[in-house]
Amino acid sequence: MKTCLCWIFNGMGLPDAKKWTYDTGGHGWGNQELQYYTAQRPKNARVENGVLVIEAHREQTFSSAYSSARLVTRTKAAWQYGKIQVRAKLPAGRGTWPAIWMLPEAQPLHWPDDGEIDIMEEVGWDPNNIHASVHTKAFNHLDKTQKTDSILVPSAQTKFQVYEIEWTPDSIHASVNGKPYFHFANPKISRKEWPFDQPFYLVLNIAVGGFWGNVKGIDTTAFPARMEIDYVRIYQYQP
Image (cartoon, rainbow, N blue to C red):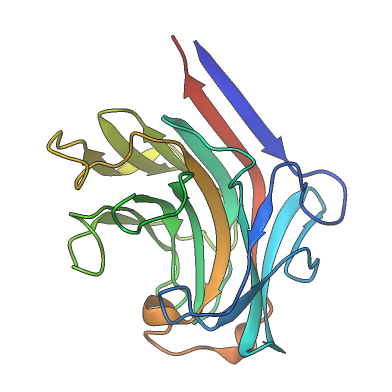
């Protein structure tokens, strides 16, 4: 039996507080990022014209030169296995680093031991090159051992695309518009390789700069830069 949770974005104003909360702060987020993530600030996260908008601005915000938003479903909703789809249009401009990803609900989080699933990442200096990855204690970018792959999507910044993972006890697959390009099989060795047997929550954000986003500098004229989300769909397989 397959069940579907579909979140669409109607009306105007802040994202639905029953579904979304915020990560906040400007401490670099472990990646030397330059933005301050705000909460309940329509300038950075809002619903308008049927889409969720996450928008990064060049403006002094506390100790940071940029503001943005990082929306999470933590404490609101989390899933273990299934198909996760997000239809999105990405920002343009060097220095932007949009992401659609997942982290484990269990707290406190021990990264990378507890795992990370990257459904979509892109950096503005390498436009339309879409990446999917997983991070674990055995496989992570700090050790340059992360499991990752990429696909070119020429209109990712101008048109909506469907970013998807299919997650089972045996593997994680990623695709764009139904075209598969990433596969990670459960090695079935230990939790160091596969911590993906627990509920994960969804994260949507735009970072600015950082060790990856800032490789070719930041185009300050690209701001404000926005990511638009048309819908989030979660399919779960039940006996």
